[in-house]
Image (cartoon, rainbow, N blue to C red; front, side, top):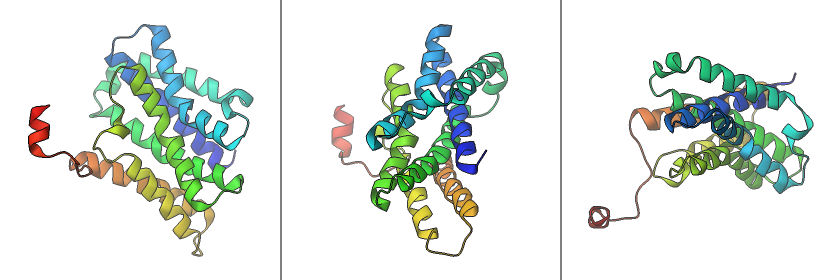
Length: 207
């Protein structure tokens, strides 16, 4: 199994668990939990594959489906232990976007797109499973709030292309770019950093 496929599977597992945690918070039934986990895990990748005209990965390789089922069962069985992990949803979500950003960039490169489009594909892969998860859970998606989320993906993907111009080995570039996404996202959460708001204080108070 190559590094990119490994990251794709690990990202799938991480997002499936984040979907389960979201569904559990909403007190959904087992079927609802599985649907949210599945959508969170493959939503972004499915949209990416459709956009680039490639076969949808999880429909060709059942390893993704098995990973989602396994992660769902694991998260449900050990949900009480996961609750002890502070902000566990943020943790799995962050791991997911880091891995999926790199996978999306690599898919774009493989399809022959420009760096700008590859960065966009990486961001779509990373973020839109979470968007679908949140919409189905009746909450505003993180990407549409002030939180630094998609920005972390863009920074990591941009760093990936910058490092391609250096003699750094490919596998290290992948690891470093993914680490940048995770670091930026976790620092933003820890220090409560956010993007500037376009609304005035008065407008916010009126809401």
